[in-house]
Every structure is written in structure tokens, then in C-alpha cells.
Image (cartoon, rainbow, N blue to C red):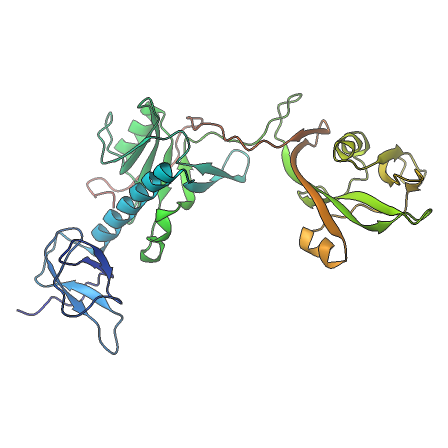
Length: 339
């Protein structure tokens, strides 16, 4: 009996139950489908890319079914490996609240990962739980369409954060070490808030550099430069930046020159205390500064409130996920499987 042509599968199971790629598979082996377990044959010729095909037609098994299963299994395996080895299982999502990308770790405070778990009205592809059995986040593997409206409503009632992963064949191996950029529902915005006005604080990286000399005594000068952030200049940030610079060992002082008609912050020489009025603070990447002969000696991530000019040291702790805003996601078509 001839194998059915037209449906291509890059992966199959060998007789030992291990997953093999068509490009690496020996011709002499016997193979079976990852999803339906029926017999498959290897197709590797001069024209078409290597692939597997069902030996006999199975209308209930499609490449999308296999892709969905492999992605789900690789995610579960990746999180469990990260947990057992003390590693991270990172993901990134774009937050609609602050319009920034945030990072998370699914192996943090996690001890149990299950697939196809029944919750109240919904069966997530993967459920990540805490040490006490509390549901932390659901993962939906989306190959053809988003979850149906019933599932969306169930997640809203449960107030459970949901991560949507849309994998391709080329993404499967990467899913063993992290999810990458995903769509997130009901996930708390982790942007830092100002302790005074409660507004969003900007993430900034301040670098301490050498490579300049004092114009008066010629001694080496320590100075700071912005290496990450959206601030165009330190020119009108005198109060906040001076305090922050001193915490990094850099001397600065505020002056009010006629040319600017406002307070500005300038560097000050440690040896002779001369103000380096002619030195403008630079907004460049570290690689550009170092290419100019300057050396980065210290780097400090921090937050700054533009309204209050408050500077805070950045801490690496990640807030736990929680429900925040109603879901506004187009549902999939009723009656279709979420693959």
C-alpha cells in the first residue's frame, strides 16, 4: 500500500518512542505518528524537503495536531527541567497598560506543571501551580485560532493569568528553554510606580565613565552618562541627578547660568573642585562611549519619575501575576478545537 502524499510532518517517533527529525532519520527504521501513533514513512528525495507521511490516510490527524502536542510537551518539559536544575524559564510580554515589554519567569515559585487539567469551565493546555497548589498561570498553545468565548469567560471568572503561545515548527526546540515573546491576558503590569505621585517611573541605566580630564588641573575625571532611557539631557534634572551621582561616587553641582535660565547639573573635579561647565552629559550606548576611548567602571539600573524627579534603585524582584483588566480578546470559532 502506498503512503498518502500531500501531508508533511517534520517529526515522527522511532521504534523506541524517541522523537526524530526527518532530516536525520535513517531510512531503515520503522516510524509512527507522534499524535495518533499510526505508521508513518520517511520521504527524503532530491526535490522535496525531508518529511514523514502517514502510511494510510487518517483524516483525524493533521500536522497542526502534531505541532500542538509537541509544543505543549516541550513547554512542560522545559519548565520541569528548569525547576529541577534551578534554572529560569523566561517569557516576555507587551503590557497594554504601560506600553512596555516586561519579563517573567515560569520557574519562579513554581513546583507543579500539568497538562489538560480541568478547572471550572475550562481546560488549559498547561497549568502552572505554586508550592501550595494555587493556580498561578495557564498556558494556551494556539496553532490555528484563539480560545473560544466560553474559555475566555471562564478565565475571567477564575481571575487566572493566561499566556498565549503561537509556535511554529522552527520554535519547538527553543520552547524547552523559554517562551519568548507571548500575548498575555490578565497579567499585572510590573512597571515601577512613583512613591509620591503613583505615576509610572521610567527605567534608566546610569553609567560611570572615565576617559576625560579636568580642564583646569588635568586630572582624571569621573562622570556619568545615560546608557538606557528616553531622557534627552540631564540639563534640567539638577536636584535628582546630583543626589544619584553622589551615590555612585561622582561629584556634581547645580548652577543657574544666564544662558539656560534654569538650574543645570555639571561635573566637578575630585582634585581641584573645578566645575566642568563645558562638559555636556551624553546620551549614548555603552559601545559608542567605549569606542571613543572612555571606559565604563560602574553601571547602575534605576527608575526615575519624570514628574517628581525621584530616583530609585532598580530591584530585580518580579511581582506575582494577578488579574487586572477585563479580557478583550477575539474568541475562536465555536466547535473548533483549540490547536
